[in-house]
Image (cartoon, rainbow, N blue to C red; front, top):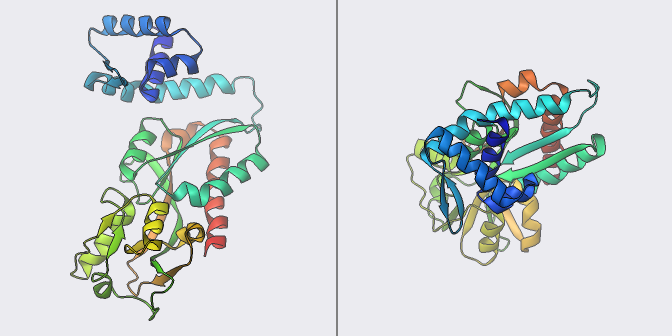
Length: 301
């Protein structure tokens, strides 16, 4: 088994396509396919399910990826750092965020990075909390912005944002001050689905009040939720920082909740292995990401 075969395997697993992986790696597709067959023959097990739509990992392939992704990540970083001055901040970093968060905070973060460290290359991806934690531990991403604190002891995290959830309504709706959850439960609600941290925060607050909030529509994408509010199909519950997105959907109004449990937090999370071994670059990126969220949040409120 050769190191390059494991690199090829990880690339195909990430792209889900032999053709795309071959293009990224800069090798011919038949040669890449041959390397994967050799790897599977050596291991004595199929690593991929080959379909007309691409290549999906088998259970064995998933286990192999979980085992090799971290070491490959470390080797690549170590190789790139050889011969570079210690004070040079460069490299490629992947940041994972929940749906919509990148739209609110991503631009400020990218502008900060490019202004201060123009040689750094960024990749931004979206996912729910569970997926982001999994990607982080498997070294698919370098940093994760999570809507809930991670329970895994292999990560370090800090809260970089704490703000209230708000009810977003049509501008014509009367504003009678802060809402209680009982009143909210009688409204046609547009809520994120259960796998997102926002929804779990809402459900926890409702449960504490002895209520169950049943949505009229479940929508994960904040822009779509606000579009539906603008169309008169219901009221959305979203973090206050998302108000900046409402500007493109016509006149919408925000109402606060009386319940202090209706708060939304964001946690900047990194694997301890990254924190202790990747040096100054990761610290700088983490600081800029936390700063971007704070700077942009002030503008959004």
